[in-house]
Amino acid sequence: MARMKFLCDSDRCIECNACVTACKNEHEVPWGINRRRVVTINDGKPGERSISMACMHCTDAPCAAVCPTSCFYTTADAIVLHDKDTCIGCGYCFYACPFGAPQYPRVGNFGSRGKMDKCTYCAGGPQADNTGVEYVQYGANRLAEGKLPICAEMCSTKALLAGDGDMIASIYRERVQRRGYGSGAWGWRTAYKTTVSV
Amino acid sequence: MISRILPVLALALGLGFAAPSFAQIGGPVTGIPGNPAAPNASAEELELQKILQGGRIAGRVTIPDNQSASLVQPAGRDWRAFHNVTLTWVGGIAVLGMLAIIAIFYATKGRIPVEGGRTGHTIQRFNLIERGAHWMTAGSFVVLALTGLNLTFGRWLILPIVGPEAFATLTLWGKYAHNYLSFPFTLGIVVLFLMWVKDNIPNKLDVAWFKAGGGLIGHGHPEAARFNGGQKMVFWITVIGGTLVAVSGYVLIFPFWVTDIAGMQLAHIVHGVISVLMIAAMVGHIYIGSVGMEGAFDAMGSGQVDMNWAKQHHGLWVEDEVKKARETVAPGARAAGAD
Image 1 (cartoon, rainbow over the protein chains, first blue to last red):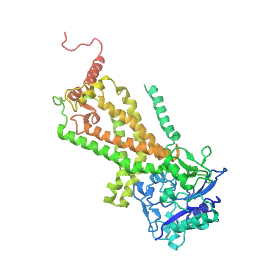
Image 2: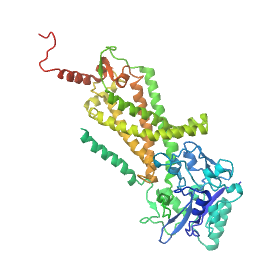
Image 3: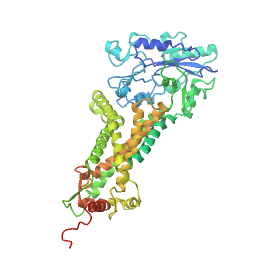
Image 4: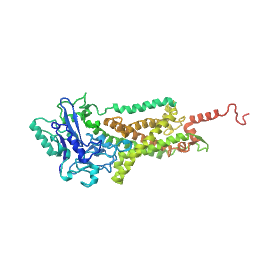
């Protein structure tokens, strides 16, 4: 099986936010929740770069490690998913996540956390693939249809890559060798304990 | 009295709420004005640097949620280690350790009897308002403690027995109970503080009381006024611990109202550590107030304690009460048969 990863080539990202919009549209993500966002560091200064970030589907995922109800599971493709039926919206995964991926609709007591929502790598959840109940809880299940995540597919500059880790790493490596520069794979060191050596 | 205490309490609460917003346990943030990232730093270098030095890689986002401008926060790893390792060990040792101490104490010394037996005469120790405030705080504390312990230990102890669905339902209701019962608990802490603080100022008697082992360990009988050294300790653990737990808890109930993710991690650490220590202390308090000492439960049960129990444990308080009672008798009144 593949080991699915995301890789954002920040030398290509133009902060168009198409990935953010495509994600929200594909999964009908509620107002106020962003499974993916584009962060610009050093905005307006030398070294400015934009990075599209969502759940990185970590190896040894911190969210799964701290969850009081053990609602997380890892698929055969190494995608980290969770069961909203056993999530209690405590917020622990948000404290532990390095990437700020877990999001909470404000429906709980005092207008605070409801059940957690995050990037599913367009792979749905524990419900049966591509059913109505799955869509309502987790959004589209593109992987079950043999497709890759919509964010990477929509990326106009192909800055955001999704797919098997070795494959997207080799694509990125080739790019860096051709153009002669590259700031590296953002989040890889933190999420996968590896980096893309060029 | 109340007018003097309230501003102090308000200030303490205010400071407690304000403190986490200044706290940057994650250290400086990279990528925002004033602390820019090195222009040519690679992802790998920046992530390594932030892991080693603390802090976050953050920038600017165009969506309204400013919290999402944090790109990588390695402090989550430290929080994970705290939650999964430190808190589990500290909590487990504190609570099980206290239970072990109690079991050993009960096995060796047994129940502390009322010296000279019960007289049948009683004296009022706590009135209805005092008992009501105590049980409101105690009742909510027990539920808060059990639901809180469930969040840390339930996954390992209860989930394998009842299964994921039942455990999720239990824990979800536990979360509601935990959130709502925080309000009577906090109110109880404030009321208990206002009612009992004047009798709980530490003094020389308490030093002597602790030197004598509170009469529990050594021999002899240390004198005590309305509250002895041990009870004063329970009072201050409740007031100070309860305030810290309440303040840090409200920071977590209302995410981002007071502080950011670093502040919430800190708030959870304070909440977790103080809570398990308080639970251990309260297990001791519950033991001595029920099984551990004959006659003690009456103080919070009916509010009427036996005269011999009162003299044994709170001799100076009994003297005061008796004196007060005598003073209320009309001046010039004489005991029958005094002539």
